[in-house]
Length: 200
Picture (cartoon, rainbow, N blue to C red):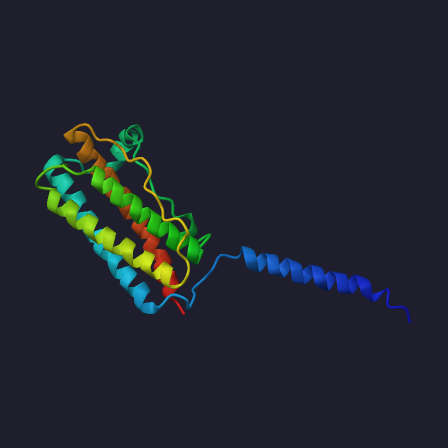
């Protein structure tokens, strides 16, 4: 009997395996055992701590300077060139472990620079700003060390790029309101992603 009729089936099987491999490659990464639970739980704790610091800054800006509605300052933020950190690899639609950790670290690095640019915002806000900077730095260091431990760290560390220049006290305070608001949105996405990675 001629083997030729079997060839289409063999070809179909090969194509099916190829298609399955491509789907698996394109599927966002889910939870992974490559990250220790102790690291993930510490990250979640650090997110909550930075969120509390950010909330304290927002409340003080609102109480002392009546800057309570960041949505009213969006146009000023664009004019000042205040950047936002992307977290596309941490979104529920495209969650990817390596990309998420790298974007999370890069974002924290960006917020370090933005908070440094706000130096001199006001004497009464300086302690709150300093605490926020310190906790963000600790969080970024924790993530970088873990990425190095598991071989996920990029070959070239991230750079902050050009930071906005605030030329008046009002610009610094308005900038502080926007940075704190953007940071909270950033942390909400990060928290959901980290919670996902803790699942077995």
